[in-house]
Length: 617
Image (cartoon, rainbow, N blue to C red; front, top):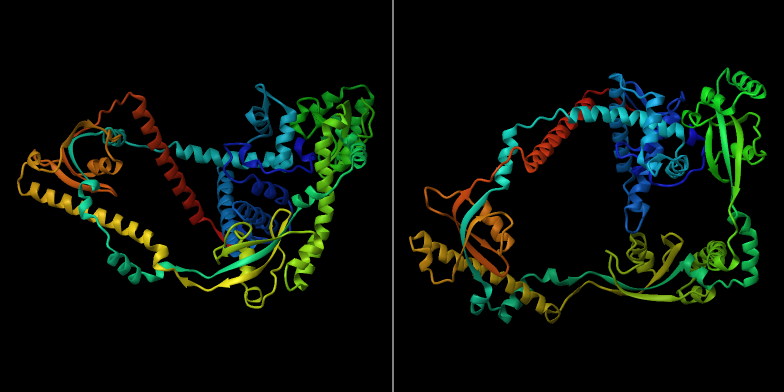
């Protein structure tokens, strides 16, 4: 319950809080919040258990944000909203199936179990000890309350118990692991005759006729798509901040306003939390009477507080400044004198009795040390106010103007130019799909209008217009000749190499002695492993893919690369050594066992999903 009262937490680091939690904390958190309400609109039921519309919509929002964050240039119009909704609903159904299965098996964590897990998590420890301030900061960054956090752990931990128990049942035969290791450690005795492209250079020529013929036969490959040369204006918060003049007088005044914040006051609170209920007021009254009678606040917190984590420390919440607690809790705390206990304070999490145990204030840094930071902050603050105004002016001016020069001059902005923007995009900011679509719209491309003002990033907007439209065109042969020649040379090189090794292999198949071939020297490799010693990788891979030699006759194959080809004769295949007591064998068997266990768990998940009664509304 400790973090339930930290109401305005921010951040996105939930994924790293607990490595053992697989299912999204945010999803379970919403379920914890809304699950107790009745009458919620439903989007689906799983074995009679509801998935609420509120839970579904919040998860859709989270998934949408996540997919936008994965884009280089976030553009909501590029998302398939219907697909996101389908994916989210299926994910929620699968999660609910797993949770209900865990409940059916009677798996659960007690409050004491959860407390023990929290205090043992390394994310919440400093120098090997549980640290309440670290706990406060981390969970606050997650954007969750303690009630949500604890419920997440309760649900996800038991699901993972099932996963772990099934995964541990994976069984792999010892011989399977040994056989794989024998193959992995296998060595081969083989000979390699390498033919280089340099030795056949006289046969590798590309004529102008061949280049012309390829160009004529593949003309479509050498067409440039339609393009536009564009003019544009970029409006950004950073650029506005850079040109805003800030006087020293303004800076010193701003420093004075911020001094109190830099001398941040933090207060150490302890509390007793009583959850709402029919007997909550009576319980609070009883606690107050016992406090007045001289009983210890710490002892009463340990006895009564619903915040079981802080209760073990006498209700201690550590030091925190403003903006951390629920507003009602904060107002009460900052109105107390040190050692004073508040009256009942109601928040959304219950009723609190709060004691102020300490006050500390940090020293105010000097003006000189903060001057640069203050200048940037004040400039960006003024630019932020100015940005909204200028953005609106630019949008209006660009909409009405026949060009960009007028709006740029009016607002003191620069008109820039870019060439060669295609429908696939171009240099920034034309790597933004929404801006490119606007640029190639009929109104802009054919009507000569400016684009709408497009937000291409955080506090960055662009308006553009077409300077010149370039029709799709056929590139001249002179422009692509060298590329065609290089491609034809590479193709012919491979053909000549393959023809040469085919000729040599035919001679060997006809019974000619390999050593008598007038084609270079054979390289011999004995007990050669897959690491391949002084050989091209494609030759080694081919050598280990070849069949075993038959009754003393070597197996033969070819390997052809870009600049060389090889004939390979495999004389012997040597089984790899296997030490069943060695680390390599044990690691491989453990890996195979885990893999088999994961497969079994996936099959179990699928079984639960297939047999669940799911009703989609």
